[in-house]
Image (cartoon, rainbow, N blue to C red; front, side):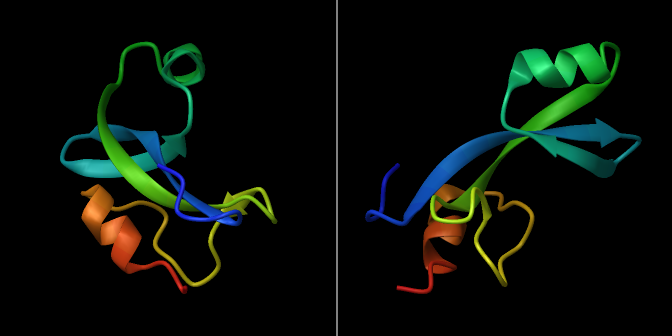
Length: 74
């Protein structure tokens, strides 16, 4: 979901192992290549199109798109 020219909310795939979370991926096929037998969950990040990474001073991922939107600095 595009917020403005700089920020958007993206869905991410998060490794889930024994109740703990691990690495975060933007692609399910890439996740499955690295962790073919792992469980996963989906989350949301606030992505900064200017830097190509998650927005500065935000969490690695959020449980809901609303949480990610609330973290947007604008």
